[in-house]
Amino acid sequence: MALPSLETTPIPGLFVVRLDVREDPRGFFKENWQHQKMLDIGLPDFGPVQNNVSFNADRGVTRGIHTEPWDKFISLATGRIFGAWVDMREGDSFGATFTLEMDTSMAVFVPRGVGNSYQTLEDGTAYTYLVNQHWRPGITYPALALDDPTVSISWPIPLAEAIISEKDRQNPQLDRGTAIARQRTLVVGGNGQLGQALQQEFPDAEGVGRDRLDLTDTGAVAAWPWADYDVVLNAAAYTAVDTAETAEGRVAAWAANATAPATLAALAREHGFTLVHYSSEYVFDGTAPLDPGHTEDEPLSPLGVYAQSKAAGELAVAAAPRHYVVRTSWVIGDGGNFVRTMQRLAGNGVSPSVVSDQVGRLTFAAELARATRHLLESDAAYGTYHVSNTGPATSWSDIATRVFELSGRDAGDVTPISSEEYAAGKTLAPRPLNSTMNLAKIRATGFEPEDAFVALERYCAGASASSRP
Image (cartoon, rainbow, N blue to C red; front, side):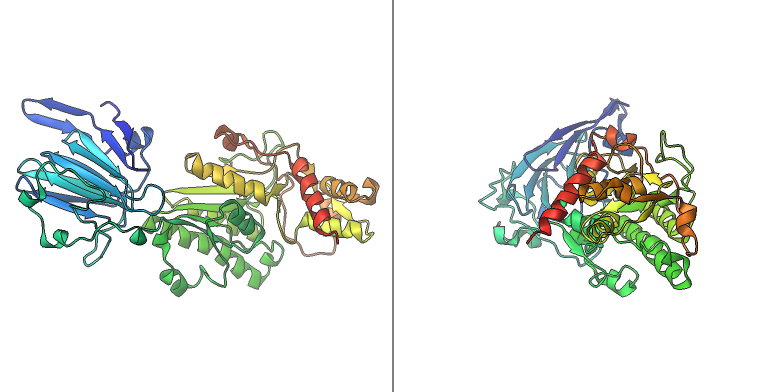
């Protein structure tokens, strides 16, 4: 059958779908909902979990205007209706209306927060709708009077002649003070380097640390208002790579990097939010060639406990219907990190020995946050993406040398050494020698990362400026 077609309306996110209906003397057949075809025409992947049918015996039955806390996809099995929708969400479109006379060849996608109502134009009309939250008795939600003078809906059958429930006759008038709050973005791990950068990139987001939301605490998770969010950015992680090899560290690493993401994935399935989870190039053993580098579909091959826990977290997040796993490497943001350490050593007159056989690219937290916004706003396909700054693969000693130069020190003050030499006498977790990730997939979505050394120069210059009296 042919693809349906999609039409926009004056209400943001409210779409009309024209369906392909095949008729003959016996009746008709239509694909009322075909998941892939709906995605192909641009309908949101809203994840319906329940199908409801409202049968209306008589012409003139009028229901609404109801603003249920879920998205819905409505259509008709038989009959005709006059549909009316009112945007009840806070913002510039509050109070916007759209009306349409519908038959069985049409469907309408109604986003959460938009009031829905209809009036039957024929006897025996069956109104059917898919929703992405389970109906439950006793739930209350905002409603609007059918005769509200502000929206002024022109009902084909005068309301005085219509069949209306007593409850719907008592619905209130439009009031901007009761506008429905739009769902927000939640940043988990908001106190870390990446979490801070995400909050700068998403200024309307709510950032929380473990002190406010501990994902390993079942009581705290159950009490959190997950339905208030349409996007959750999980920047929380256990990153003490070497300590993860200890008995205590192993438990903490698996709790934060594997169990917590699994909890978020289950919540994403239940509440319908998009989950963005940040992972690491440590999920690979570092044996991939520099060209093309690690690709998204490379089999996981983690070496140490930290790496294994991050790989497990990735697998758990993949169970969320709408998810992005963003793998990154060598993150630099506000706070303690390798670049800050090299700047401090340079300023203190220290001449360090730095590993030269581990290669990769820096990823500045601001660049990672920018890529996150791009993935969400460009409607990129869900799945796994590699994100780092771009440029040639460099070693830790190459980066240290450049930081020393930017700090006014001689490049020769940094001594390159091997990983084996650096590890002598220490208890260290194994590290991948090649952390370079292929960026072709993220680039194919229209995102172009900034050169790592260009970003490094700006970062170091900013640090120098902030340290001046």
